[in-house]
Length: 132
Image (cartoon, rainbow, N blue to C red; front, side, top):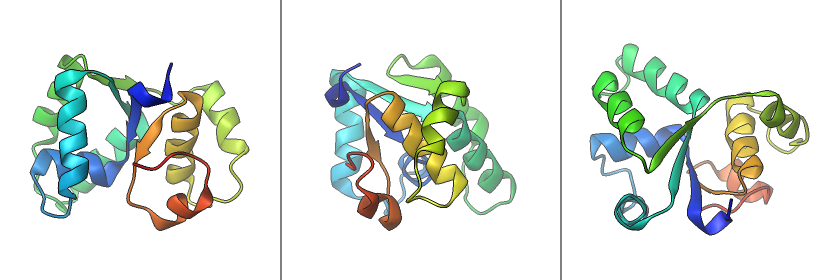
């Protein structure tokens, strides 16, 4: 897969996008909209969905998780990817990122040679993947 056509969404970006949050920078929203309309793949790791479900169930954000999940499953531009042995192997090589959820998300981006929509400063500073 080509990096210019594949993009991993992290939990904050995914939730902010689907809730219309003002915390999501307009440029990122526009990039995601463009990918959905014109092409590319929006990769959603299962760890991201798990985190989104968790914050939804805990009431930390108002989102209809079921509706969001159905849309992600049905829209061809979104691709849900699991945490298999190949991504785990990539996770073990990421020493600069301590938080395990972030390591899995970054490992997924590296495995798919994808850019990543991410807000985390540690990941931005790690140089491990292209941050969008």
